[in-house]
Structures are given as structure tokens and as C-alpha cells.
Length: 467
Image (cartoon, rainbow, N blue to C red; front, side, top):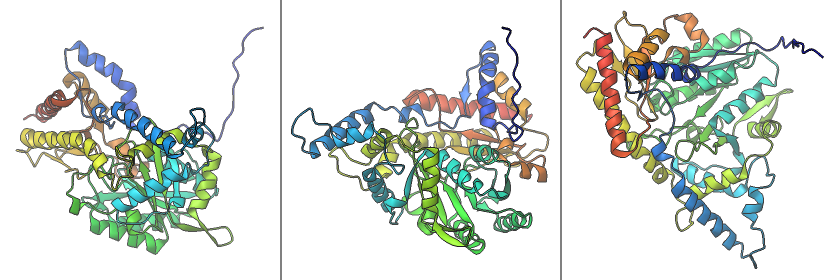
């Protein structure tokens, strides 16, 4: 019997654009080889990954094992053959909301850190913050009506990739200044979307350590955003991977949206940056209510739980219990704050940030008319901008940086949604996203390698700019 090609028809599926970070990841092996053939060392200023120095799990695994033993002892089991409750739950089906004790502990610690009270019943486990994004989009797309997602220009590439999966949704993006989205543009885009007959469920953003813009929203701008969204009845979806990766002093840390207005916000927390990225532990929190068909007001949380049960019915309870271990000290008492946990990570990122900021200033600060860059108050990134109209940071520019200078960076143009590029075809084509989070070395070698990477970047920029 001869084999035949079978043609399958899926007319509703369209080819989606690939994010710039995925394109770079796909092309990097070949570019690495080009650099290696020239004897060049690869300098990592592109990847947005947590640093290996802060994700070594060995100490955590020891602590987790001791915490599990403590949980078993607290049950007062009579003999070694009795199965502890935590162990039974960890390897059984669990509720869509996950173990109650984990949500209770997280609500107490996280709420205290942000000067508010969290109701554990309104915490929904997600597969990282990305799982929360997908869950929200899925819920609103289920309505079948044309949708408009409001977001920043530029914005997180993962959000754009998820939003573009649905043929019924489109992005209306808002330009930003140094404090956040331009308020009048935010108003205009909500009104434009509604005038186009689209339902606007939310405005998505990363207000702390914005990815990719490399800055944090001002307190004043956050208040203005809430006022506009309250006026139009639109939610704010606050992606918060970097709230604890903060370089601001304790008194200067802005409050997240959910602690300013929990009934207008959806907060997305991930443990990937202060814990470990592999387990993909995240939580969605909202106290919002929305009107559905028949003008009935219902809890958004209830709708999301139903949506989650159709998406990921059973979360990984072992991963959630592992995260719970992070919420307890060496004496197994619940910690009062996650800031000490974050501080171990912050030490590395704070050093890297200082090396980058100092290196850019020393290498390129003499030419403020030619270059500028953001000063990150949180997160992993700074955006570097060429002010000369003669330089374009397109694909050829990125390839040249890797193959001829050994420098890996991420271009900014693909972080701008399609509508922003229609408004300005050149948008982002003079910008680069520089990361100071990742390298392949540790300790003093990391500091030395990172300093060398920034110096190499500055030398390449001077050469390209004819200095």
C-alpha cells in the first residue's frame, strides 16, 4: 500500500507572528558559530532569564524536605506507615484552587508586604503569570464578541503572542512617556476601540520594571490610570514578575494596582523571579465583579475558576507545597515578608544593574546627543536608544552585533504591537533592549564577564556610530 499525502483543512487558523525573543533564540546557534569562527567571545545582554546564581535549588530542596518532615510531625502520626496529609495531597488530584493552606499563607505574607488584606478565596493558582494572561484572554474570548485589548507600546511579547491567537481580538496600544502610558492616549484608544464596535475588557501592563521598556510607572501616573479605567469601566491587568526585583528604597517603592483598588484590578504574581522558574508557580488575584448577559453582576473570580477548571483542572500540588516552604523560615514559622527571600536574588541583579549603568555612562555618557537609556527602578532591562537618524536597529544590525562583535541583544521593534507600527513604521527601529540579568558565570567571574560585556557593547556602539 503506497503512502499518500493527506491534506487537512483548518480555515479558521491563521499564521501568527513569532516574537522577537523566539526569533533570536532560533537564530542564535548559527550566529554563535559565526562569532566563534572569528574567535569572538559571546556576551549575553539579550536573555531575560533568571540568573543561574540565584536559581541553585540545593539549599531550597534541603529546606523543603525539612519543612515536609515538619508537616508530617505536626499531624502526630502514630507509625511510619501512616501517609502524611501533605504527601497524599501532593500526589493526588487537587482542587482547581490548590491547597487552601498555601493560599492562606501566601495571602498573609503578600498582603502584608503591600499594605492590604488578601482574601485567600480570591487567589487562583496559575502556571506562572503567563497562565493568568491566557486564562483571562480565554474567558473574554468565550463571549464571541469582537474584543479590544488595551496595552502599552511597547509591551510584553508574550502578551502580544497570546492576544493574537484569537481572530476576534485585536490590540489597541498606547504610547508611553517616562512615567507610563500617556493618559490622553489611553482615553483615545479605549474610545476608538468602542467606536469600532469592540468590547474592551482590560488594559494589560507591567508597571514595575516594565518589560521591555525598562522603567517603572510613577505613583501619580498609576493614580491617573485608575481614574480613567474607573470612568470607562475597564479592568487593569497588572503583570507583576518584578515587584520584588526592585532597586528603589523601601519608602520609594510604589504600591501595585491591586493594593490601590482591588475591585478594578487583576493581579498576576509569579514565583519565577524570587523562587524558581521551573515549577511555574503563579497566582491570579482579583475582587472585581463584571456584568454578563442579562446585566447580572458576577464575581470575576468565579468565572475564572470555571474557566480554569476547563483549562488546567488540577494544578501541581507538590509545586505549590514547595512554594509554601519558601513562605516559612528555618523554624517553620510563617515569614512576615517576602523581601528577605528576594534580597538573595536582588544582590546579584543589583550588582549587574550597577555594572551596566556605570559602564554605559563611562563608555557612552560623553555623547548625550547621540545615545540615551532608561534607568530601571525594577526588573531586568534597560532600553538603549540611538538618537542619530542614520542608525537602524533592524535584523542586519542585530546580526552584525553578534557575528562581528559577539554581543547578543534584543531589538525593540517587535515589542511594539501591529497598530503602533502602522502609526509609525519606524517605531522601535532605533532601540535595543539590554538585559542585565543573565550570564553563564558566577560570583567574581560574573562581575568581570558582565563588565567586559558592557565595555564590548559600548566599543561596538562607538565604532558603529563613527566615534
